[in-house]
Length: 388
Image (cartoon, rainbow, N blue to C red; front, side, top):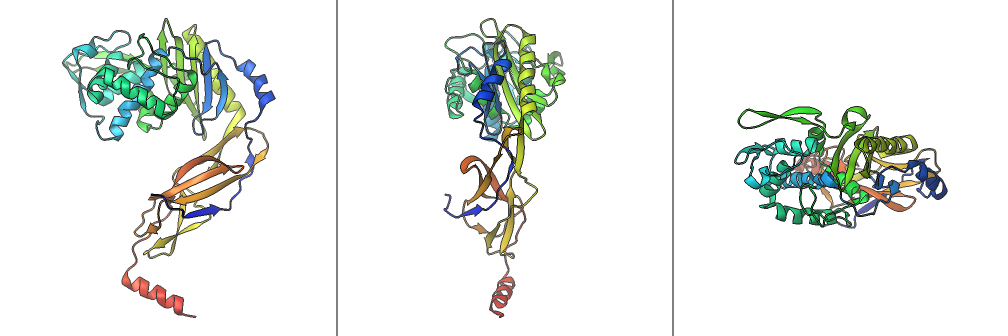
């Protein structure tokens, strides 16, 4: 339970920031940014700030981009200890019968979860999705129920899944906005970037035979900073792509749905990313390697106070070259800090405010350790306090 034990850090940060109310300028650039597909969405991944939107709330089929959520639930099962990357996943006749994109899983055989997840991330393998779904939830239909629950929990409120593959089935739909939120949730798992970065690799079967896997997201090789995403295509959905790219301290997510050609989805995604990196910045306001100005009292420690810092670097996303905003912080402790304390131990949260309005939060951690005080330490400290 969090206590009302708070420090207001008297800290201001004046930089090239803006409150994003750039209506006239935004509408002028929006027309130039229009994509050839049915809808698109571009946002900052850290703050979920919208950069560009084109019919982003229109409900549309998204084909294999729904596998973003399939992978997300796989990682969630790993986080909960219900699955490991080395877990052997059995392949049912139902799973192996999936058509479309595949690596030709053998019915009755078992494969490592990591290899199945990689085949989903790299080449959109449908049978791998169903095999993972059956292992995690008992059946692919139960898995889909969990996917729909998860979608609502992350703010994807205009989304409904009918299967875990994205193969045509009614009713099933999502939006560019919701897909961006799904990908933002998935990339919280660092292992995902390793899986989806593979360009070409053989998928090995238990009998020693292999199936070639080539990444369907061509921008993995060609666009600077692009390190994740998921393609999708059906005749109903058209060519789709959700991708994320990072340059410096800024990570951006772009989604395009319903493009006429595969080339078009890649070109429009590049255009969206180019716009983001040319016109916006993510200025770091909390550096994990620099302690905050305030110290925190430690009960029962050799030291009376310890320095604290942010668990990770945190920035404020904004247009380049705009007016200055005031950035301030509030430290909220979970409880009073008791020794022993190790460097990196979580002790609460740092709330970031922009112009007095809450912007984001990050864990506060001990920047230095402190051992439990011995009886002699307590005696010496007490004597020092009485030594006038």
